[in-house]
Image 1 (cartoon, rainbow, N blue to C red):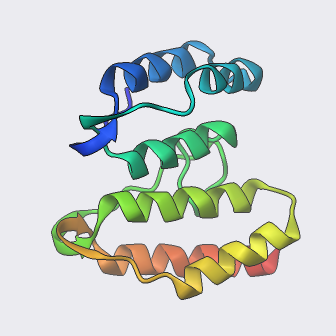
Image 2 (cartoon, rainbow, N blue to C red):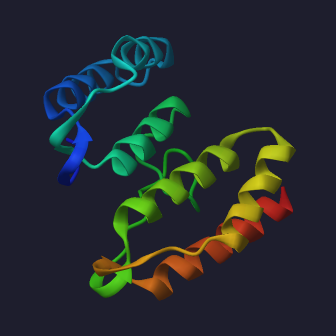
Length: 151
């Protein structure tokens, strides 16, 4: 089951939970997943809900048919796991960047891949009190940028 952080001004938890269940029930059928997403979008924003950047990143992964893979892996590989440390890259923004890069990596569009390389080189990820290990994320992004350039 997918877990999202609860924040002020986030997506409605009930709606997102129902969407997660529908996507998991689709068992990888992209038509059913697209229909489930289209049925509930745009997602309603409430006072206390799921972090919008995390949900948006998850939706991007669902739409590319790659719900679990990280940005530097093949679509069916194990997801990248970053250590959570004090003073690391904020999780939501990092996940959103990685989801966008992953979508470009699996696409066949050269322009989209070039844009992803540009996003990686220009990215200035915010640092939070607790976040992803900066060294791990930086190394991962370097590997992905090299892969995108090679394609």
